[in-house]
Figure 1 (cartoon, rainbow, N blue to C red):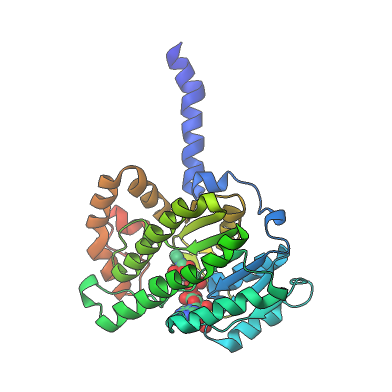
Figure 2 (spheres, helix red, strand yellow):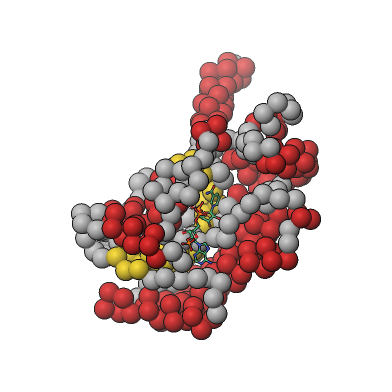
Length: 327
Ligand SMILES: NC(=O)c1ccc[n+]([C@@H]2O[C@H](COP(=O)([O-])OP(=O)(O)OC[C@H]3O[C@@H](n4cnc5c(N)ncnc54)[C@H](OP(=O)(O)O)[C@@H]3O)[C@@H](O)[C@H]2O)c1
């Protein structure tokens, strides 16, 4: 009797879950949620850093489609104007402001930027701060990183991002509402061979923002940390280098990444993972069986560096399964 129940219920359910997991492009909690909640976004002021291309550009387009009032930031004003141009009209009836910003600039400049952002839309104030900008992330061995690269990456990804948060949060606290959406990375959850400094900055962001939420959630401040794995940003109009299709096959599109990020935020998730396999599997292992994940990543670390040097996919199953060809 028990055997029959196993065959009829447990086995098909396990197969169903396995197939679902194999095809998933996000964690199960995230994928169980419905579409983005328009009522959480409509008329809200959403400030996006790194809005000049890639995921930031797609976030801007989708927030606009949900009726947000947008503040777009990055260093390249011409690209921000392009994005604004593509948003104007029916996509963004509620307004778009451009706020040029260099996260590596002085605290004084960041303070000015915060005051300006707060003053837009007749002083409505920022409801959502989307920390999306990041310093370039070429792959290299942990020991090959230069002091300049180390400082520049931390300056933009950590110092600038946290400083902006420290300067903006008091305005949000006064209004008793505000939501930080932080684009971290799978590299902010797992070791990421070839991306040691980038991973260090994303781990730092996770540490800061999860702690910030624990301190301020009783005062109306929300935090959603998004951890994408490989994302295909080649279709973004501002993409600087088109990616080879062979390298894009394991990637989630940046449109889908933006949509899932907005779902995570509007459904109040504290953290969300966005990735196809095999990175999603590694993220689950790192969370629930860290020893297995560390063993696996120790096994593939050197091969991944080699794959990056040979411009091969650094996210393929072959790295895990140990096939040398096209690692
Ligand atoms: N793409 C992926 O596979 C992937 C995977 C995991 C996580 N993520 C994360 O998702 C976010 C977006 O990724 P993406 O691939 O779309 O990035 P991207 O194409 O490299 O764009 C980076 C954005 O940040 C801006 N930026 C760079 N330096 C800046 C600075 N000093 N001050 C202000 N803005 C600056 C850039 O604009 P300007 O050059 O005009 O300043 C650009 O808009 C990043 O946080 C990234 O770490 C991406």
